Image (cartoon, rainbow, N blue to C red; front, side, top):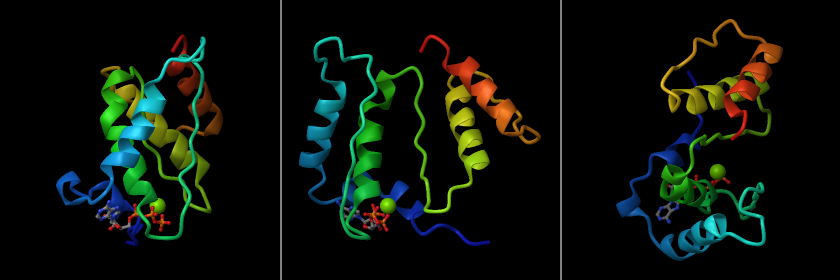
Length: 124
Ligand SMILES: Nc1ncnc2c1ncn2[C@@H]1O[C@H](COP(=O)(O)OP(=O)(O)OP(=O)(O)O)[C@@H](O)[C@H]1O
Ligand SMILES: [Mg+2]
């Protein structure tokens, strides 16, 4: 079995991280900021830099800091050759286990996944 080396970044211990606090706090603040009616709007940020710089680690730190303030959340890693079906199921399992029930998605195709995800995210 091949394990994505990037997984490593997701399990880094916070205490071992160096210099991540400043950028993390900036991004957390920006994510939680309520502008003019923009609080319910999607926010997107990009973290750009060379391989191994700590982009995923920073993203994960931001996520860990703010996730409890959201009803629905998921942290997904997308590689350069993404498996869309797997990504959809990954989102569904993270979103639905917060709702109490975790669904058996093993025999779902894309259509089924999309419609289930729509239901889960309705009015959110
Ligand atoms: N602030 C930090 N302090 C100490 N170690 C760190 C820090 N940020 C990242 N690392 C370590 O550096 C390695 C690379 O980090 P990470 O995977 O986040 O980089 P990346 O920029 O996402 O790389 P890639 O471009 O390959 O996806 C990991 O082992 C991670 O634990
Ligand atoms: Mg990365």
